[in-house]
Amino acid sequence: MEISDAQKFMQENHRACIAVRQKDGWPQMTFVTPGIDPQGRVIITSRGTTYKIKHIGRDPRVSMLIFGEQYSGSKFVQIHGTAEIIELPEAMDTLIFWYKQLRGEHKNWDDYRKQMHDEKRVIIRVNIEKAGPQSIKRI
Image (cartoon, rainbow, N blue to C red; front, side, top):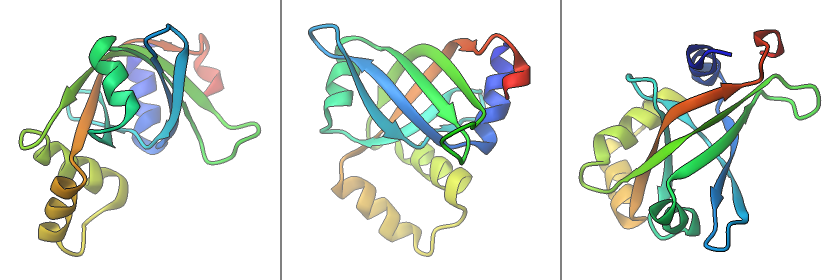
């Protein structure tokens, strides 16, 4: 599968599980809601105080399984890449872009910005280096 096929799939499918590496090497997996930025990188928001942020800071290699709306029989893609953490204030424009892509317009952007600051939100941005499955018939 080409990375562009995975990016296209992710523009319409926003359910995923991300796997990051804990200090002992075992994976930590968390459900996330990914989007795609204009450069084709995966974007996810998280509170800056979570364990996944701590783990990514130590080892930026991540894997994600992105799937459709149904659990059984859903189409899916898997990606692997290198993540970077973007903190506020630099993250704000991407946080807004992420929200608009997944949920549309917010009823009050000033409230949204305040909430992002209060929650110490960050952006996890992943450069996709590998994508699967091997056949695009699976998506």
